[in-house]
Structure formats: C-alpha cells, structure tokens
Figure 1 (cartoon, chains in turn green, purple):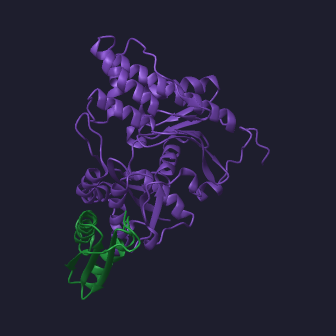
Figure 2: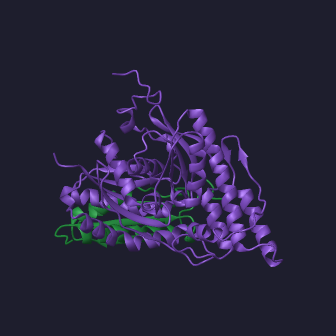
Figure 3: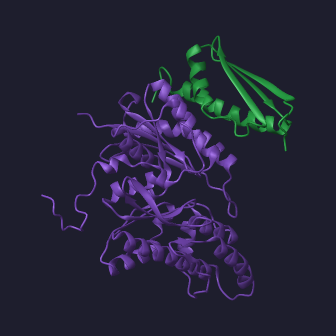
Length: 92
Length: 353
C-alpha cells in the first residue's frame, strides 16, 4: 500500500500537435472529464498550448504508469480519429 | 413541426451499437456489432473496449447513412452512462463528447436499464407493466411508481444471463450469436429433467449457487452417461425461468398490475416468454415481449430514452458526461412519465371525464 508520503518517482510526458487550438481544446475537454481511477497512485495533468495537447503523468510504480498511459493513448486516439472523420468537411 | 431526432450510443457490455430515432419511437437506423469470444471464453473489459474502439466510428457512418440524415438534423446525442463495464462504457462517452463539440449538439446521459424499459414500452405498446429485466448483467423485477422505476425484486448475486453464459462455457457451446441462444436451441432436445436447486428468497433470486452446482454435476453426470448436454440445458432453463416467473407473479400481485413486459437479452428466449405467458393468462393479464432486434442491447434504446428526457428539459453538461459501472434503475427520475401518468388507475374503471 502506498503511504501518504508516496513517492511520485515515475513520470512521462506526451505531446500531440493538432496544429489547431480548437481541435486540441476539444480533445482536452473530452478527456478531462474522466479522472484517474487511482489518484493516490497515478496523477495526470493536461494543458493546451499553441495547438498542442500536453499531458504529464506521474506514478508511484512503473506498472501504474504503464496502465494509465496506455489506456489514455487508446481514448486519445479515438477522440482524434472522431475529429478526423466527423469534423469539417465530413463525407457520408 | 420537424420531428425531434436523437443519435444514441450503447457500449456497456459486448455489443457496440449506434441508433437514430425520432420522439414518436420510429427507429430510422440501429446498426450494432457484437464482440464474440471463442467457445469456453467470456468477454473481458479491456478486449471488449478494443472491439468497440474498432467499430464505433464505422457504425456512426452506417447509422447516419441508413437513416438518411446529416448531423445538422440531429437534436441531441445520447450515450449509456451505466451500469456496465468501465472501459467499454468510456468508448461511447468519449465519442459523444467530441461529436457534441464538433456538431454543437447537447449530450444526454442515459441509464441502460431504464433504456431497456422505455424501448420495450414503445415497441410493444405496454403502458404500465411490471417489467422483468433479464440480461447478462442484470436481473430485476421493476414497476413504475411516483416518478421512478422501482426495483421490487432482483438477483442477490449474478445475473440470470451470466449463469446461462457461464454454463454454456462449461459445455463449450458457441458464443455466436449468443451463448443463451445456443442453450435455448439445445434445450429443445432435452428429455430428462434433472433436479437442480431452486433459489427464491422472498422477492429476490440467487443464481451463483445453482451455477456452482450444475458446473460440478454436469461434468460428473456427462462422464457417467447419466444425462446429455441437452438434458442439462433443458433442466437449467426450466429451473431458472420458473424462479423468474415466481418473483414476477409476486410483484404483479403486490403492485396490482396485470401486464408483464420482458426486456433485456434473455428476454428473447421463447421458452421464458412461453412460461411467463401461461402465468399471465392465469391471472388475466397480458405478456409483452420483443425479439432480439429490440431486447438485445442497441443504440436506438439509448437514443429514444435520451430523447424522452431531452424533450422534458433534461441534458448533461459536457463536464458531467461521466460513466459509471454502478447506476441503479431507481436513481433515475423518469420525468417523462410523470407528465402523463395513466389516468385510469383502477383498471379501466376511470372516474375521470
């Protein structure tokens, strides 16, 4: 069990360049709704800057970092594909 | 006036579906895709979510195309908030949040169980029935009272569909189109009834002990040639369904309602429908049931129920469009029912003009 003074020694960063402040903000808004399931083990910080979505993860163990990161990338990909396929100029 | 149109997303278990409906219940399109695992295996959250990720976007295109509508014509986007498996639920929620921003449409979060009930009511025309909701994840006897769908009886452990699905794995029956369907077909060839525990506790039922018993007995009896797989399927179905009929009958007496509506994936089992119909006819009531197009999870049921809520002023802000594994049927305030309460509470002998 992680104690109250848990060490956040595992971290990683992810940056996705949408080249569009609007699209980056849309993905941010969609993914910010779901909080990390174990906030005492994994922390996620997100921001949008210059059309980029910037994500920073911190975790107490490598396996928690891996699980959170990989689940996040799956939904990030889904959100991005949704914009690509149903955004401006979509074809049915 | 233009008819209101909703786009609905369902992905709480092993099916991902997208439906387009209008407020009068017309289904314009309702495509879905089922994650089918090999015989002997169940579906797990992670793999199921991967399946949904792969199919959801093509399903949206197909739903819009079949319904012959453009995003402009949609009034609202509805998604399953819960109950269900977390990772699969997230797929629909994320897509809806993006589409809501792209198309500038409001979001409506929908309770999966309530959606089954509303779909059943609009398809069959059952106005105010006792509802038996039976599926792979849920087993509840429900009736509407004072603004909510109240649970009168339910399983205290696993769902009836889960019991059937897991027994199908013991026999390594195919999961295509569903394990329950294959048990139903095999049960028709059963000849000998094998005694199985019968577990009704007041208004509630329990299936996990029955499953453990038949899992252990099946292997033994089949090895000794004491019975066939068909006999086991037949005996299991008869026992489980008799329990469901018993608690449903008790709820009917308790609520003083005559009609029964069966919804949920197990609801398309024709033997269950037949047993329930016999009980109903003995009490002078009617049975309402639907086939697999409507009782199995689908996007249209979510779209329709969300649209009912939207038409009565409910919507879900983007920041609150979460999903949850636990979401009880009676947590939902069914405002759309309050405004048209059945006026004839005394079974047709109405005193109102």
